[in-house]
Amino acid sequence: MPLNTRILLDNRPRGEASVSNFRIETVETPPLAEGQVLVRHHYLSLDPYMRGRMNDAKSYAEPQPLGEVMIGGTVGEVVESRHPRYAPGDQVVGMGGWQQYSVVDASQPGALRKVDTTHVPLSHYLGAVGMPGVTAWYGLVKIIDPKPGQTVTVSAASGAVGSAVGALAKARGCRVVGIAGGPDKCAYVKDELGFDDCIDYRQHRDYPSLAKALKQACPHGIDGHFENVGGMVLDAVMLRTNPFARMAVCGMIAGYDGQPLPMANPALILINRLRVEGFIVSEHMEVWPEALAELAELVGSGRFRPRETVAHGIESAPEAFLGLLKGRNFGKQLVKLV
Ligand SMILES: NC(=O)c1ccc[n+]([C@@H]2O[C@H](COP(=O)([O-])OP(=O)(O)OC[C@H]3O[C@@H](n4cnc5c(N)ncnc54)[C@H](OP(=O)(O)O)[C@@H]3O)[C@@H](O)[C@H]2O)c1
Image 1 (spheres, rainbow, N blue to C red):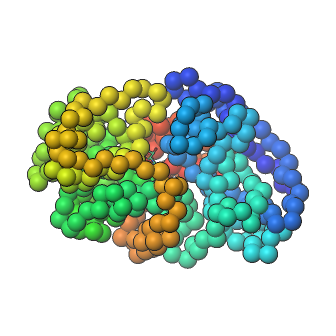
Image 2: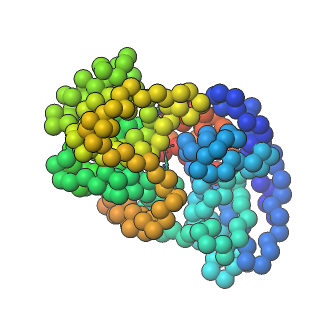
Image 3: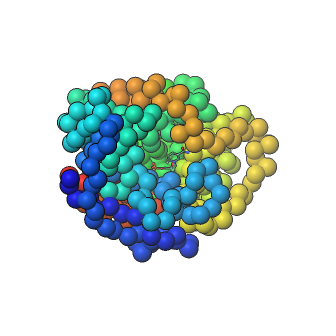
């Protein structure tokens, strides 16, 4: 059986995460039992939720156990199978973790899914046509529910989730305004993703200044907002919301290292009669088929061209992950393993 290099969570961060929280080791993959398949991972997905799992704190999911392989989505190919539904060469998406190979109990519901790479490249099944894309779809379609002509804003707009929110909202005839960090990301959001406008939050020292820029970009106010960041960005958006605006609260990455994120004007929820709803995409498995079908169509037809930042080799995963938390990624952050 092949050797497998993998990354474990060694100890929990205090404040900012660092590479010393992880440990790398190489072990032999075990022989397959009946019903199992051996998957060679081609790409590992790095996602902000992993930072939350590193803490031993009460949350919607159990913490990542110490001394075990870091949790993570993977795409790859079956190299050996003792399950009748899988054969060597099948391309599959699963939760293989931060390692080169995984042994999967293929009869477990949802453990593996075969994918078709005729029109959609394999890596996009971890991004636009995978969990981040469905996240965008759920928050936009089920919570914001925008009508043609309405204005939708999204923070972390150039990222895996944010870019998909933009593509889906444009497909519904909305005016879409992104908020992102830096001129390059904003140019990409407007010129390549086709957003109507994008604001560089790094150009603004405080939320009233950012709110002023939003007023220009959203002359008719904001009808729906998709929040990925929290803090100053959320405060600025709330000032520009229209009565009965909907806010899908997807992420609060500005606080993932434990920083408090006080809200400047919570009274606006009442004054503007806002509907504010948080959600976790894995609790809405019923929408995945419909969402994936629309996302695959947008990507397959070239109407949505998502960008990726690719690190190389399993050893690069910790640094790439820390970079994602600092905004060094540009689009979906992946690690290429083959
Ligand atoms: N609720 C769910 O089920 C669910 C599922 C998936 C993802 N999420 C959340 O969705 C959000 C986006 O995830 P993603 O996978 O698409 O990641 P991503 O946007 O590709 O990458 C994270 C981005 O966050 C931005 N960022 C980081 N720190 C920031 C800060 N202090 N202030 C402002 N922006 C900051 C950076 O972009 P800039 O350079 O533009 O700042 C960075 O590139 C995250 O909050 C994640 O936790 C939630």
